View 1: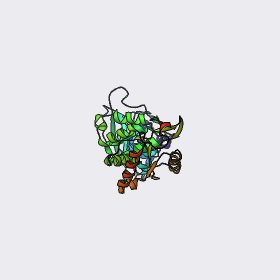
View 2: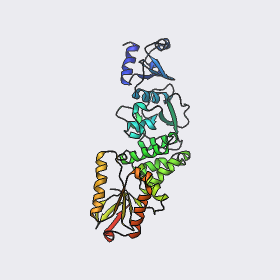
View 3: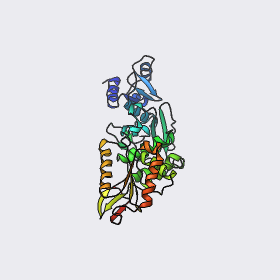
View 4: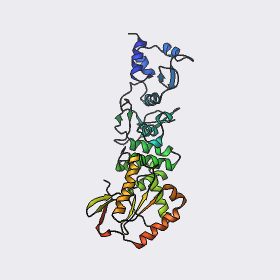
Length: 333
């Protein structure tokens, strides 16, 4: 088998993304590499030391593989888990709608151990894990063969580079609602990383909302409206029990008055079934003779006064319904 035949097999296994060191290892002379990389040649240089054995535009997967190859130790054969994908590319591949389609991600974030001498370049942004033990997470191998951090760590690494705090809140809400990561894990990643990331306003806001039980952007915006209206802080997403049996998990609930608030928004539920469950939940509360105030995010933005007035009246005239038979827990079912 010739050197080029060997390289073709290698390229087929790696989506045609190889390093210069791999080509040399397979016996391809430097002159042959240079000739094939000439303008109009069959190969193209993607990044320093990284070559695509095809011409034309790279696919989303090829860009990810090229970024991992670029950030790998120079001159060494790529080792599984030595470099990990992180940031928005991981979130897009996980299916978070707010992250966009994987093909539309402009920057590929990679995580390497601290102390390695490799800089951000072109479409690759390099993150360095702390030197402390466990600084570089173990990562996992995806179905496409590439190595990645989990969604929680990817959100923490993406936080400083998202221009909109609302965008970051939406990503975190989708991650928790879609069970891509647990609330406790996300909080640990956001607050247990670098001090600069933990101090970001959008990180502090998300951490505060997650701590009090808020799991969507719509609920976070509703909380801000309630605060501006001078209403007491409700419980967010509590588990309500009627005579010790499960009743519902309303978006917000004031236990002293037994009043619930439901933020009805099809846009902030991941699937139509989620929206249907919201309607069913409100019906169960009303069947138990507990007053439920319904509002859409649009109402809360444009007509908050009427929503606040209705809630204030109910809070002042409570407790309502079978208040002495209602108990609650902060734990989600």
